[in-house]
Image 1 (cartoon, rainbow, N blue to C red):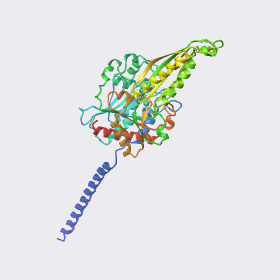
Image 2 (cartoon, helix red, strand yellow):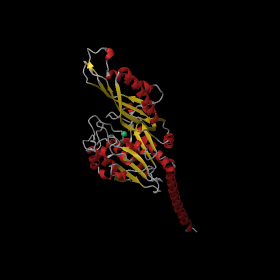
Image 3 (tube, rainbow, N blue to C red):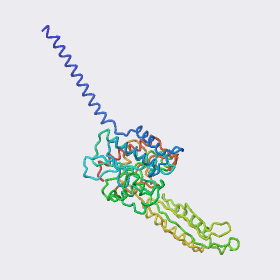
Length: 447
Ligand SMILES: [Zn+2]
């Protein structure tokens, strides 16, 4: 007993120590699990903003922005950088025949259509560091966050970086089957034709049919983007929930009058095309502001011929542009403008001719996705507002194939397509978190 007691005591102490140790281990492990459950899933904003900074080195211009036009060397180098970020995010990276970059991640059910999200990284000449880049790197950051936290999704995911957005939504047009042979021969801002540009980026313009996806083959498309206008900043709102991308209709308007001597032709005998044009421009403004709504109309280009101080203008060629979310409204405003033109023509003895140049149909976003975006922003205690996108985006091509959603973050001073373009790091992080939470909700929802 005398001998046994300390032994037993020692044994007991050892057991206790082990038991404490085990208990401590269990406690630590469960607190880690608990912390995982309690720490809400968020992107790494510091990493996202530093990646944006790194991307801005490719095609950097002296004014502080980038000139990374599609198919330039800078574009190709920027894409290499982005593809490496995608691989780091454990995405399976490919370049499709239209030269879009696609980073895939498997779902738990690969028999269902994928969820797509992304943007573009090409810029206008003397552009900024945020247009397209925020959405592209935001999407990669979301994929990285899912990978690091080992969050599975039911849908397969595809992060898409569309090529040549600024030159006419070329990459997304290929996916939606709208890219024509004629467009392939257009010379882009890089000096290369689109056809040569696609080859330059590793695509194959002879195999474009392969990238054309059918309606229903994509579960949904999400895009994060800077607002490019000043409403969110002015109203101190964190997140814009995009209602849709406005339709844009362009016409060339030609007015035929009669060119005559400015000194010898009395005022009541003139057929002054420029005077008719002036009345027309006023009428366009009057018609478009006569009804409530956010429709806009612009006459942005005008040329009077022959263009001499001492000759009554015999001919005017000008542009007319109408934008709205509702195609029917555009059509009705256009009809009223035509009626006004008829009256002006009769009164001024001139002739108006309207030639349709370009039509981009409005692309409404999906109401269910808009709600998921608002709910996600709400969870993050961010203020939202619904707003149209007055600028074009790849999302409008994707809207032909799938329900789409767009998330806007503020552009300081409403400046875009300029080296002065700026979005605050926190706003960018917020936008990426909204993208993350929306994607997860979308994955669980059945649209
Ligand atoms: Zn853009």
